[in-house]
Length: 195
Length: 408
Image 1 (cartoon, one colour):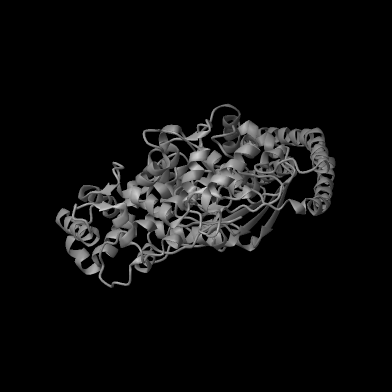
Image 2 (cartoon, one colour):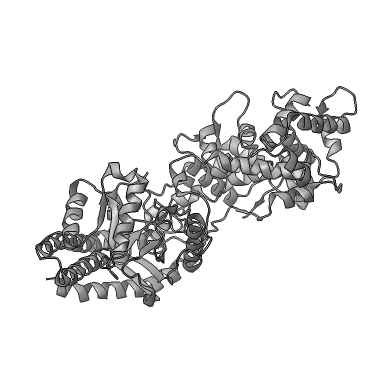
C-alpha cells in the first residue's frame, strides 16, 4: 500500500531541519520518502543493514566507512534528523549563502565541514589525527588485493611526508586542509539536489 | 453467454478513455518532480584524473577519497536498483490511493473527484470484472479438460488453440486491459522461445491472448494446480516439480526437447526471473539463451497512469494483487514483437542475453541495467566490489607497473 510517508513528518520538524541544514521544503519531503523507503523495519530509524541493502553502496570500496559516518559515536540507529544532518554536508555551496548571517554559525555544507567529513573517513578512532596505520587501512580498502604491502606502505609514507609539517608522523586536520587547499572541494564533495 | 458482455465491456473501455482526457486536464496542476538528484555518468578514471592536482605521475592523492565518498552518498540518496522493486512513482496523481506517496490533501474538489472514482471502481467495475474472471478461469479448466479427451492430432491442436485464446481474452476483459500490439509480423513461431520483460503475472495473459504459447513454470497446489493440470491435457506445457527446478541440466534438456519438436508451440519465458517494476530491464538469466534456438524478444510496457501493474510480492499476496488490478481504472499497455534473434558466431550465452535485453529495453523505453533482479532478495556479489578496487589500483600505480603485481 503506498504509504502516506510525508504525513508522518510534521511541519515543525520540517522547519527545524530546514533551518539546520538549508534544504528546501520539497527537498526535505523527497528525502523523507527516500528515508522511509530504506527503512525496511518501519521503526523511524535506519540501521547499518538498511544501508548495506543498497547494491551500489555495497560495492563501493569505502562503503562501510561512509555508512559509519551517518551513525553518531556508539549508536546503531540513525533517525531522520541525523540522516539529514549528514546529507547536508553534500549540499552545494550557493553564492547567496556566503554573505549570510555570521552569528548563525558555520553551515554544514561549508568547505571546512566538507573537508572534515572526508577527514573523518580516514580518522577511524576519532583522535583528530590520521596515523600511518589509519591511512594504510583506507588505502587497503580502496585497492583490495591488487597492490602489495610494501608498495602500499611506501605510498603511505610518501603521503605523510608530503603533508606532515610538524614532524609527528601523523596528519592533523589543519595539515589535511593545507594539502588540499588547491582542490575544488566545494564541487567534488557536492551533490546536485534538484528542487 | 459472454457474447452480450463483450460489446458492453468495449463500451466501458471507450468511456474510460474519454473520461480520462477530462480527468487529466483537471489533474495537470499536480505536477511533482520525481528525481531527487542529478547524477553525471563519469567514470572512475576520468574523475580521479580530473582531481589530481595537475601532476602527471600516478600517485596517491588524499583527495581521491572524494570520488568514492560522493558516489557513495549519491547512491544513498538515489540508487538504480532498490527503486526497481517498488511501484513506479507518478508525476501526477491518478486518483488511486495506492499511488499516493507525496500528495497531500490539495483541495476538496480533488477529494470529491477521488470519492466518485472510488464509487465507480469498487461499486461498478470490480463486480463486473470479478464475474468475468471467474467465467474465464472456469471455462479454461472445463474446456481444456474436454479437449484433452480428443485423440492427439490436428483437430486437437486446433481446438486447444481456440479454447486457450478465448479464455485468455475473457481474462483480458476481466482486467479491462487495453493492449496495443505492434509488429505482429514478428510473432513467435513453433520451435522457438519467446522472451519478455517481467512485471507481473498478467504478462502471461496479455501475451497468451494474442498467440498460443507453451508455458513454463513450477507445479503449484490449490487452484493454480487445477488450472495447470487441465491446461496440460489440451496441449503440452512444461511444468516442473519443485525439486526439478534446481537441476539446471534437467531444465535445459526438457526445454531443448520441446523446442526440437516443431509441432509444439513456442515456449514463453521471462529471463529476469522475478517481477521488476517496468521502469527497467534487469539481468537476463542465461539458461534460456544456451539452448541454441531462435529467440523471439517481446517488450511489454504498461502505462502507469491507469493502474500500476507491478506485483510487489513481498508486500502483497496474489489475491490482494488481483483485487488491486481489478479495481484500477484499466490496464493499458503496449506490446512490441521484435524481430527474431539467434546466437551469433563467437558470442556466448551471456553476451547473447545482453544483446536481446538491450533490444527489448530500447524498444520499450526502459532503462537497461546489468544488475541482477535477484538483488530484490539477496546480497550483491563481492566480485563487483573487487572490480571497483581493481580499477582504482590501476589508476594508482599506472597500468604498466600494475601488470607486474597483478594477481589473477
